[in-house]
Amino acid sequence: MRKQFIDSMISTCLQGEGISQDQALALETLDTQELEYLYEGIETVRTAFKGDEVKICSIVNAKAGRCQEDCSFCGQASKFSTDSPEYGLLDVESIVTAAKEAEAFGSNEFSIVTSGTALDKREELDRVIEAIKRIKAETQLEVCCSLGLMSKEHLVELKEAGLDRCHHNLETAASHFEKIVTTHTYEDEKQAIQNAKSAGLKVCVGGIFGMGESFAQRVELAFDIKDLETETFPINFLKPLEGTAMEDMGLMPVEEALRTIALLRLTLPKIDLFVCGGREEVFNGCQEKLFSAGANGILGGNYLTTKGQDPKKDIEMIERLGLRPVYESA
Image 1 (tube, rainbow, N blue to C red):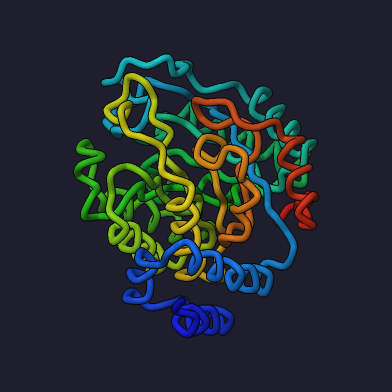
Image 2 (image 1 turned 90 degrees about the vertical axis):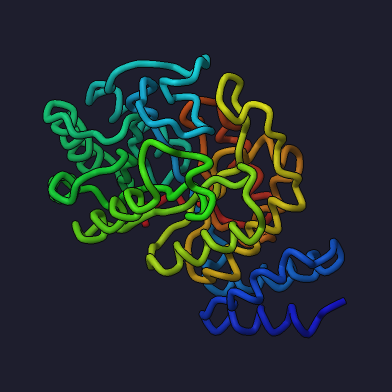
């Protein structure tokens, strides 16, 4: 077993520094026994920077379907024929009600998510602004939005309304991007993130794993996001949806999913790592292992187009591990 190699990486991370790109690439070669030893060390890293807290984020699918982008994994793309829901932007009261329900079961963060290239119609933008104001006034939640390729000017308006954070995934590595999306570019994605940072917002940036990318491309994405200096990394694992271009892709094996979480914790030791889409399907009866591999957060409740685990079960799982769900706004 390569204990010295693993111990060296853990020592580096405990100093607040991430591992090198060469070390990250070498993680692919660790066998099962070495990974178990690695996870023991990663638990010390997660505890050092995140304590025993597990953050819980919830979302509302505030506008669904009819998206003109062609993201190969997404049931909301209009080019695909799926059973994904389709509806226009929810009214303010419905969004606020969803936020209060999320807070009631333990979420500390709530995200308003809309389909489409960007939420840029004035009436829709004003509705989201009003919802943000109401949520900030009537709950203790941190408010996040995931609204597509937004301009800096509109993001400034949202921040002035009380928005805390902007979520925008890069989806996959730059070298793999054109195999997943062709209707916009990787640079468009990065520009949207820079717009959010320029608007003074915290930024949440992650990706989807298991879309045919190599381990080296997962490393590529991890280091690209590290260079963006963001605060939160949502980890999604592909759940193949019937009717999409990726309907025949298999689920990522559990060991590889855990190896991917470990890669991200070792590359970004201080970041908040949330495991989101695909959690139940990929990990099934071993979701507890997420935290040993380095995660310190989960997406609770339902996802954009699919149902999630009962929030009560999430809370029970976290507490059973001796960890503490975070109930108050960050």
